[in-house]
Image (cartoon, rainbow, N blue to C red; front, side, top):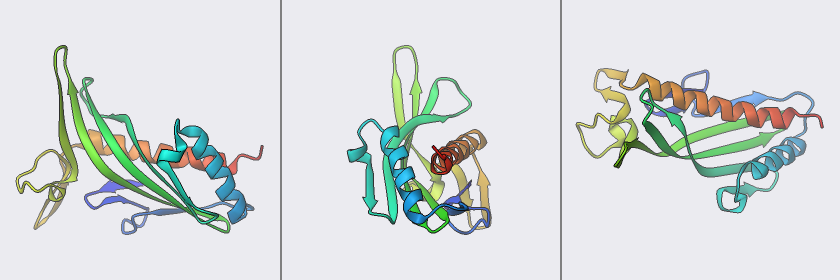
Length: 168
């Protein structure tokens, strides 16, 4: 998936989800395998995983795995990923709910809000954003953060898919 100013988009650059075909797997089997994987992945699954039995799994959690180009800067990321199950396919719909830049030094820590797009902020002159959107288009302000978020979500999708396809 790619991160655009409106959020993550699939290969068609319009939909905020990606659908991955899974051959020879029923909807029920995909759901059960994925639920098992996700609940074992989280320390306290009851607080971050919700389900609609046999239809969808939603994970609302946080990660500090997102990195920028400076070693003392990380990004605390609150996310929501909803997985929808159909016969022979899983639909992933990821969303960044909140992003905070965490700068840590020897004797200090500074945490400030960061945005996917400057338009997500109430400040019309916001520069703590991945994307700068203007009337004539959008441009990337923070390529490293964009890449890190894309790598993180694509790795997340890959790990879920690997568990769904595991034949053990």
